[in-house]
Length: 433
Image (cartoon, rainbow, N blue to C red):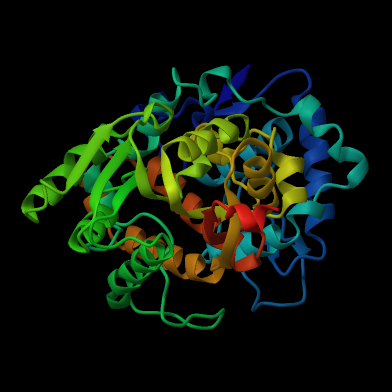
């Protein structure tokens, strides 16, 4: 049962309430007060030693109450906030931001300390209760052949125009690779397109793509990798499940005069046929799911020619955290990437050894580059609110996406998340002995 939400500072319209029922209603029921009280205590306990100043309407402070230079998390409706967190855990934490129950002028600054201590926020004795009390993955979001296209469409088919409001001219929606970046470097927007080309070129180099290469790309995006590969003289087949991406990528290929060199199919990776000298996939494996990792790599193994190379860019997390959270239904699943699951290097190595002839032979971490990429996207997204609103997206949607981009950036800045460029090859008979 739910009780109606008071409007969000006068901005939460009836139309938004209809579009966002779980934001428009505060959890209400016989156990809600008990769970809210537990969540309020747990939140104060978990935040005591975080580098965040948490301010309540009654003037009380949690976190570091002596510093005014720390990022401020301002809780405007503590009871509503506690009800959401008590009912849905971290899903409720994100929903509370979407509803305006808490706010801040430094969202990444607030979220980064939480990400740094993600594994320790909940006391270990209570972690065992998580699966019993928090929401479960809906069966409809399992990445089966029946569900995968709808999972992909919910994110990538939102609107090509929406993505164009915050991506650079290459329309590349994955981590860039800057010539140099660290925790203190802030690169200008003007460098992002070059950094995306650098990332793509390094992946193509890793896969050995050149004149005459038969290349398979799993996950088209909006076609920039296809363009770069074809310009090298490769023959490219790219597969996607996004109708919006396929349409725009095909237009871009046609405009570049490369139609004879690039084929873009609306096709599940499991249905790919043919033989290829190289396979490249950029941040698509996160949409596969651990259950389907074996068939994903078996498909690649099946179509890869002798001596072929596989270059993958993948968002990763530590193996122990991947195992601990793999069955957890998260805010990102519910609102951004249904069916998504991050990988670990150890997990990739294990599954390929167990199910294929492929072996992980090279890897490079570049997480701080993703943090910087996300900062540039987030600032561009925020600056283009009026354009996004003109496309028909409401305030709740924009708060949701700001939270998603900041949440992701915080994950990479804290080191909780990473992104790796990895190479798989087949060992020679001599090396396999």
